Image (cartoon, rainbow, N blue to C red; front, top):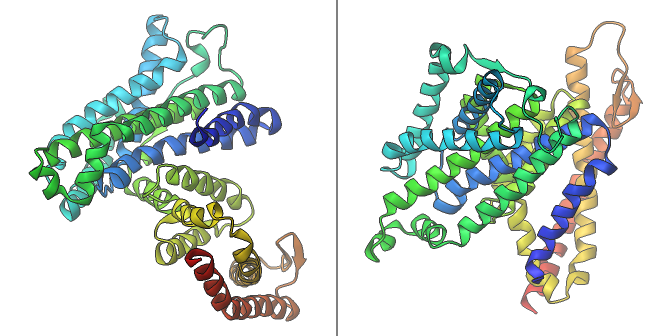
Length: 407
């Protein structure tokens, strides 16, 4: 096996083993959501990262896929059609592909800001239309029961782990197909159109048609993600057709890094963990996600994947030791500062929303009394002291980095 395929093989093995290690149904549900978000984020990367099309309305294809999947499932169940459940995401993808063909026929004629504004108008139009067109959207939501579908080799998908392996199988197929798309001449030309559409036109390729084909392919895989989400939760709602849903996937793609294929995968994993795990411990999780997104855009515009790729030359040259300690000297006080600032924010929020008689709170598993002065002093000292030490050690890290990369 080629060396570059080893990480993917390890990831597949991890997919197969994880539900047997993390056996709680709630954990498996989080893994399902993570896998669905990975497919959705990669489909968006086909637009932005591969073809350079910034879309504010990509979530509508996720919504179209979810509604189409449940309608198909209910229709086959009512008619007694022997269509197994694992096939239904394909119907969802094909329906979203059809909608992408219709919308892409006029939207991909424009580029840049104009294309982005068209996508914004389309998502607002579809979100409003979902209330009017009852036949398909059912007034904003529809549901179904996957257990009534035709068993697939005896599997009735009554347990969450069975749904997990269904989603994992589609995840592997979708990731492989989208990666293969990037290696095709069409995928390569999409990169060329992204970088310089005029030069692509000069060598005989139609930039508009390349954008159109990429747009349609992205719509198909977004529909597959929507179908899997509908099967996982057994419901599809108009919330997936909104600008907020499209904005979320933009955030995920940028957090992971749109310039690298596996970047959206990292972004989807990170965002799902923040959304599910962090939200269990604080009501301000969206604030922290927003701060993280701003920090990534300002200081690491290439995302997590770009940051990792930046370290490959140092790793290949065997100079990791030169930057290891400077990194520790910056990261550790930086984390202390983050903990301190987060504690201050949590205590301020608690004081503003507290109920009489419930003055105590828990910050990072430590019971504190925000009405006392000691927690404020400790949190402030951690925030300011950690920030000061981090700033003081940053020049040493920069010098070690330049030495490791220039040697």
